[in-house]
Image 1 (spheres, rainbow, N blue to C red):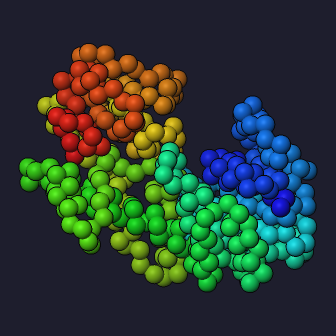
Image 2 (image 1 turned 60 degrees about the vertical axis):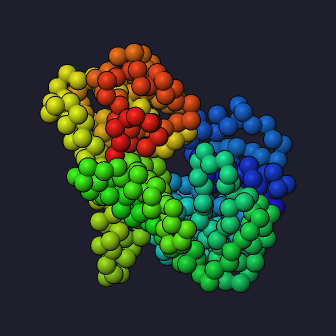
Image 3 (image 1 turned 90 degrees about the vertical axis):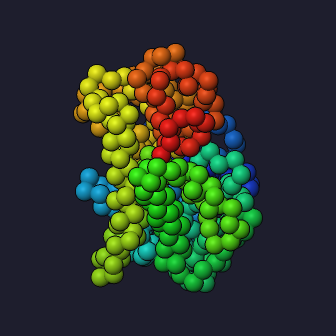
Length: 387
């Protein structure tokens, strides 16, 4: 099949590679010239063409949208990239093409945004399906191939063609009744995580008042062989999914007159974790942060990735600066940030080191010698103060 993947970020590029490996002729389109040039430097596959030239994606069999769906400055869903991708496809596609949306968005997006935008410009007959991505960067166990894919077309013909494609790159494909079910499932998956992370973050605050370890409580609860799933407390949530997807679901629910109080409360608890951690740091340093040398270990949003999107480490950094602290960072993966470089963990270099993200290659011995106070928000450093 001739396939164009619109968006060559980590989701779209991984999809393009999976489709290329399956033997399809794939065009990876991205508007960012630096993204395309970077891909061209490292990828010379004969059946994959990275491009930012619109003319290259004319008359494809399948168009797959894999663009960001972030929040705007008012913390509301921003579908501008999705709309741009839809109009691009409208200018490029010929009758009979299958158009798939993998970008995460609220239930109804395929019909209300993608189809609406395309049909406003192009009156040809197209097939449409939703197949929300399920990517987890740095996860060595689960990939596009072995992660079940949920799909649904707007009609039987659309579903049938989408199934043929996804069966070529996925071991298991799950067909659901409608695109809205597929879209909702993706949002609920990450809302489930947001809610449970909020619960353990609240437990961490309760445990502090009780004078016990939240991590020990969770470990004890984890011995139950049924009815419990382990989540760990942390500095907050970051990345492209957990801080964002629940807001898409809540916003859609409230627009229909449904309540999303539980989801909103979970969002609020996780968003407030950097403030809670700031208060803990202040208490460790006897009430004042002015002039204190504090190092944040791990500034990406999760372990073993370089992605900084929505990273709670950066929120805490700003709060520490406003409190008068001198802030440094150490990250084995993110070597540079905001004009500064990752600082070495030299002996007695800081008043306090906060472990926000635990990358696999973190040197624990150097960490422990770098400051008299180690506050570990990940629960991985023995002997440190924990949430």
